[in-house]
Length: 76
Image (cartoon, rainbow, N blue to C red):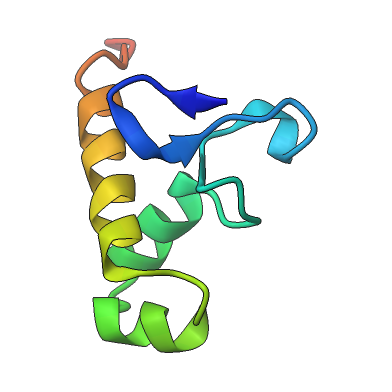
């Protein structure tokens, strides 16, 4: 199922338990964010995962940014 407003991001119950993934492939939005947070560049990711397109990386980051706005963080 395509996530509304994010045509390159999908959620399938039988793929990663419904976690958001890129175009129904076996790479989650969270994987891309983690790789990039660790310092991997777009170029590195596109070489490491040749099935990805640059637009997929942008879509994953946009989706992560949007969903992080609604995340609740408990105050201590």
